[in-house]
Image (cartoon, rainbow, N blue to C red; front, side, top):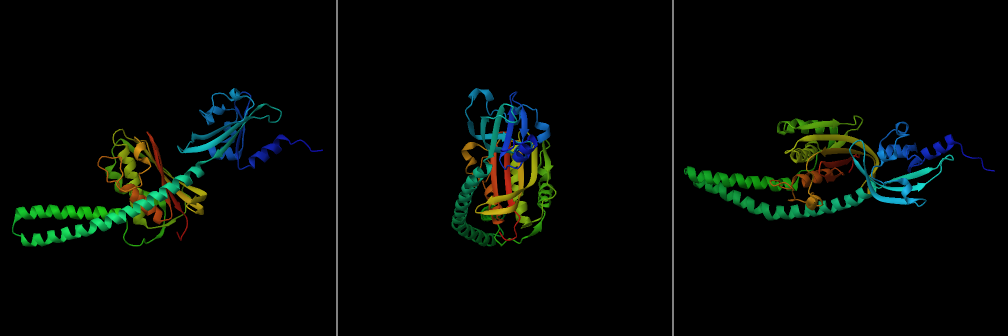
Length: 352
C-alpha cells in the first residue's frame, strides 16, 4: 500500500520542478509558491505567502471562482517584474486540492525565450537587409563623392586668389567630407576589430563621461550593476560607439519631459543567440521613460535611414546592431510610452 505524501515531502517535490507553480487557497491568497515561480516573478516565497494572488498576477482573471471546475489557459499574459522588465508567460489555472484544502493551482510557463528567438530571427533579417543596402549605397555614393571632392580641390588651387570663390568651394568641400563621413558610419569599422578582454562597466563609464555634458538637468541616470560579470572579449572603441548610440537615443527620448535612464547589467545562463547556445551571456539593458518608439516604425528601427526623430539620420541603431553582431551578440528592443528598453546581449566566448 502506498504511503500518503507528507506536506514536507510534497513541498520538496514541487520545489524540485522546473515548472513555476503557485497554489491559491479558498480565500484567494497565495498558500504556496515553488522556487521556480519565485525566480520567475522575482519574489520571496516566504514573504508572498498570505498575499492576495492578484498582487502577483494583476489582470489575469477577475475571479478564480468564475470558471468553475474548468481549466483556464491564458496565453500572451505579460507581467511587470520588480526590475521593470516585462515577461510574457502562459498561465494555466485549475481547481486543485492541496493537503485536503480546496484551492486553485496556477502553472506559469515563461514564453519570453520563444518570443525572443522569433524576434531575433526578424532582427537578423533586418541586419542582413540593412547590410546589403549599406553596401549598395556605399558603392553608388562614394565614387561620385570622391570625384566631386577631387574637382573641388583643383578649383581651390585655380581660384586661390578669389576669396569669394574659395568660400563657396570650402563649403562644397566640407559638405562632401560630411557626406563621406556619413557613408563611412553606415559601413561601420573598416578595419578588423582588435579585440581584448574588457569590463563592460568600464565601457559604460567611458560612455557616460563622454556624454555627460549633453545631459539635460531634468534627466538622471541610475546604474544597476552586477559586479560579478566577467570581462568580455571586445573591440573597446567599437563597443563604446554602440553603447553611446543607445544612451543618446534614451536621452533624446526624454528631452521634453525628462525622467530616469536606468542602465542595468546582468548575466543570463544557457542563452541562445542564433543557432548557438552560450553557457553565459552578458545583458546590458538601457531603459528610459520617454515617449516610446512609434508603432509604425518600431519593426524597422534597425534598418538604415529609419528614424522616429525629425533630425535623425536613422544610422545610430543599425551601426550599434552591426557592432554587436560582429561580437556575436544581438540588440533587442521593447517599447511603449514611458517604457523603452534596449537589451544588448553579448556572449562570453573568445571565438565568435
